[in-house]
Structure formats: structure tokens, C-alpha cells
Length: 250
Image (cartoon, rainbow, N blue to C red; front, side, top):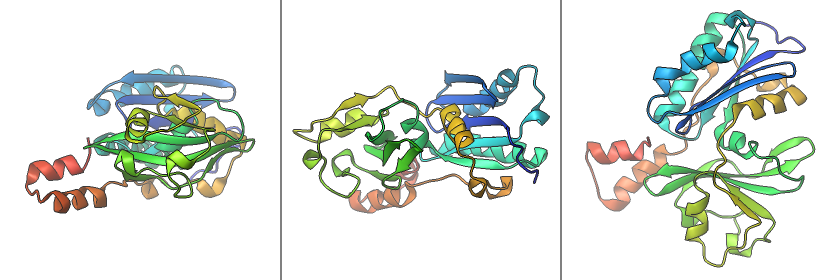
């Protein structure tokens, strides 16, 4: 695997939602595109990579940052597969990126703001995790999880209704959370927020940590729904192929 240069060119990918996101970061130049392509990421992502590179050769890429989930199971596999293939063929490292963290980084927020990043997981559930904006970047307060909106808690397990109104909820799961909790006081709801791989790549460049890098063969999707999906089958007493497919997400 090639050594990362001091000022690397990064190809960033995320297909964990309906959006197919591709970005190329080289020095101060950032080219990013996001297109709403539900269930069609695999048909367009390579063309978007080529478009984002422009006059640059694919061989100029030094690092691939890839959203590994949680999110749409099918979507995640598209970006991970592309990152694995390109990373292996170019013999360059890959940077796994939590899609909920990428979503939390998509909106500039004051230092100290606590962020509930929420993503619609379908079948009535959401993916969620807590973060805090700091001078050094985004700090993870709780690991990504999946739950019914009413089961979402604060970063320390406390009821949301007992938290001080100094936090924001962002992502397409934010409305599901706010609707499921009575008397909830929130600083802001940013439902339009989605993962932006360019922000995560830029944050990595600010504080390059080689220990976070993997070989392409080591990159894996980050699923958090499998156990919940199977649990729902037993709870609901359902069986059959159709229910299993629902439990595995989009």
C-alpha cells in the first residue's frame, strides 16, 4: 500500500442514503456532486467519479474516503465495493467514514453543540448517534445504533425530554424523533442534512491520523440493523421472505 503524501488528493464517496455523493479534494480545491438516485447508485457512481476528477487521472488519487454506514444496506455496498476495487487497483489506503458522523459534519455548528444525527432506517426505525462539535472536530458521544424513534435517548441514556434544550437533531430521521417524544424542546431541527463526504475528508486533512487508514481489502460495511431486523420477526411472529427483506433495509 502506497504511503500517504503530505498533501493527498482524496476521492470521497457516500451512497448510504438516496443521494449518491462523490467529491474530489486536492489542496484547496473541492469538487463535490450529490444526486438523488434512489436504488440507482451502482448505475451512476463511476460516471460521477470520472466527472468529479475532470482532467485529473485516477492515478492522481492518494486516498479514498468511503461512507460505510449505517444506512441503506444496498447503497452502502455500492460505495464500499467501488472503494475496495479502486483502492486495490491503485494500491492506496482507504478511510472508513461513519455516515452518521458525515451527516453531523454537513452543517457548521457552534463549538459545544450536541448533535443527534438521525437517519430513517425504514420499517419504522431510525439509525442514530450523538456527537458534539468541538474545536478539534466532531466528537462521538454515543456509538451508532438503530431503534424505534420513541426509544432514542440522550448521549448518556437519559430521556430526551430531560435534556437541556441546547442540542440539534439533523437528518431525515429528525422528524420521526421529534414526533415520537412529547414536550421535547430542541435548539433546532435540520431535516435537510445528509452525509457529505467532502466535509469528512477535509476534517481528516486538518488532523491526519494514519492509524485510521485501512487497506482496501479491510474495508467493510457498517451494518447495525441485522439483529434488530431478526428481533422484529420474533416479536411480530412473522416469517417469510418478504419480512426478512424488510428487516435488511433498503
